[in-house]
Length: 174
Image 1 (cartoon, helix red, strand yellow):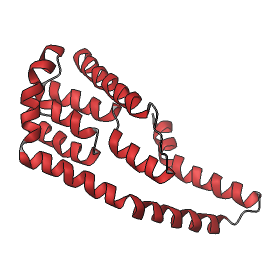
Image 2 (spheres, rainbow, N blue to C red):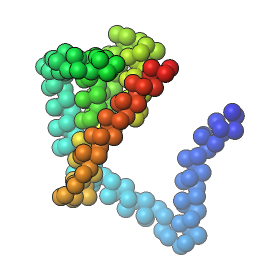
Image 3 (tube, rainbow, N blue to C red):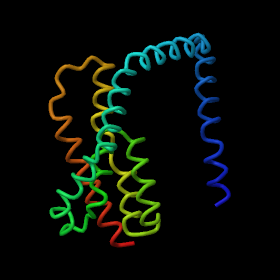
């Protein structure tokens, strides 16, 4: 067990050392490449900032308006027979747009039901095996200037559905 802890602590510094060492051995200007990459990353952040703000404001409005509570009450009769609690519907919907907003909902679920409860277990597993679909697509496709997304949305929604089903099944096993 101690070897695993050591490896996990040493992994990032070792990786940085290997990258810098490889660059030096190949006579690259490692620091200049780092500065160029940091500058490009900063430009990317500036470019996606409006999208981030829009997503955060939208999720905040949905949460404050009570729409998410209405959604969970409305869809509860469909999800409850599938062993997916209606209280978790807002988390699964918001997670597709914003992970940080979904984390706020997760904290609310932990406060109400407890992190070790059935609801808490499903939520924890679901948060780790689903993706912020719309955020990720908007950021990556906008940055790469992709016009035709083909089957990306359908595939991502299907993967999220499978991840949610897996979270219910795993929580029942536990």
